[in-house]
Image 1 (spheres, rainbow, N blue to C red):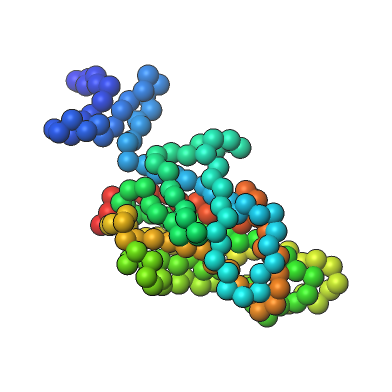
Image 2: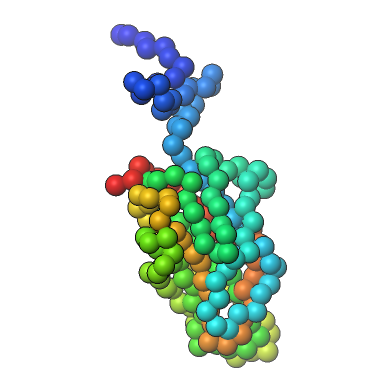
Length: 183
């Protein structure tokens, strides 16, 4: 039996690929994990609305960002590095009036935001009571980001009648996770 004792495994060009800490944990240098939530506590939405008020949870609430920082400007997101990403989005909303539908969009552009392809998901909110009705929509999308300069994402929401899109860490939020190198 042989034992290999190392602290780092490097590529021949000197780039650190893996590090072993003193507890035996493998630390990969290419992971990304970032969690964001809608900043406004409540926003009334009835037409398609670009969500542009986001706050990153970077170190708190039992969470710490891993890897580079995503950037968002005017609701358009830029990835910190290339790779295959898993994006989870949750939209929480409430209404006192029934609405035919509410929909959320994860939209992807491969041309710097000149045009976007939408992944749309719907939820009916047809409760006719006079009480406030709460609901949410969740979805996951996988994206192969091969160019951080041209590949962008945005999140939108709409409803057939006015609903309150709710913002907080546990309500309207998105999580980005890099799961593989670009393909």
